[in-house]
Length: 143
Image (cartoon, rainbow, N blue to C red; front, side, top):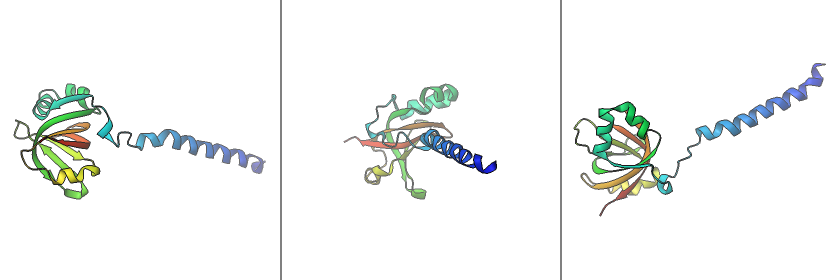
């Protein structure tokens, strides 16, 4: 009797694996892997973005978190730690800024950035810790 049901259980198991893969994998796959061609939801300068989070973090998370935003600002610092390319933008608040984790395809642009250079960054806003955090950023340099 057990041998008769074995193919049935194997079929059910395989269906569960296929369905799990089909429904779970899109969650882990980064749907915004190329933001360069994605339209932004909001455009804002770095000062206004930081001040918004400092004045009301909950409201700012509703407005910006998880959305593609375009931020205008001036380069404060560029780092290349732990295989991450990071650009930090100034804000009028001395203790906070905008941390931009830059897409690997933008490495040449990041290497040529200079302090106080005006840039536009497009990325996914992840929220606020001590600074506003943008991920998967693309850079446009102003001449």
